[in-house]
Image 1: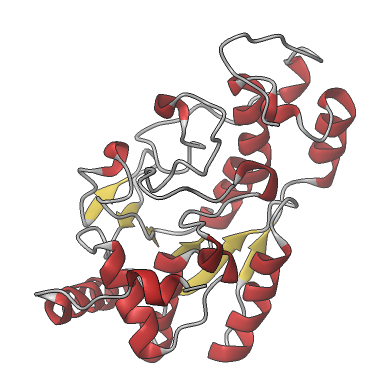
Image 2: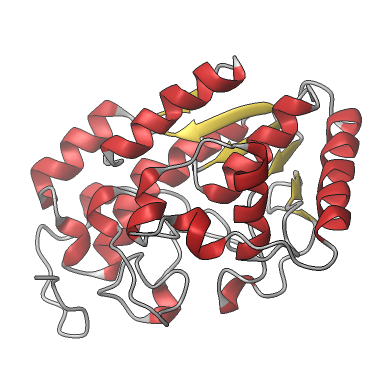
Length: 261
């Protein structure tokens, strides 16, 4: 069966220019925010490209990830391979143990399937609160957002300011999926083998599935929800705080969200 490189890697017009522009942005970000800039990596294909660019150029940009406690084994394996391949230490930011225990005791391991509110509370606990700690004391961060990823990201700028006044760089904003995989193929960049199993967008294990031919790039994420709900809050213009998940009801019946088989 063909893998992701066979399926997606294609050199398109202007590829070298897009690589050069991404590298220029990373260099400028490292120079403008010495010791205070970080790549917030999901270990997805785009973030592996950015990790490679940072490592090749020996840029003073830290690499960090959110270890949510529900990641696929293959994602955790990639984390170890990334450190070995590039000789770097990837910062790991985890949810608070007591918050996870309290949430699971009250709502169960698979609460995310029962309502959007519970799913977003899980994301807040496992991703948004750790992200706040990841970004604490930083003046700038780098993301792998691309305009092609979804309608909600179609206008992603190369440089923006988040709600806390930090510079937010998206050097791959104008890259195509073919660009990403052509870079991975030609630079021999480590990547998650789940991409070979038709998972272009990989999150937590219970919230990710393979997509079918013709489906939207992010349709494998939270596939039981409406399309307009499919963000965890990491990359929206503003998002609520993590809140007190203990205030959520123990169970909810929501007829608009189905439970996956």
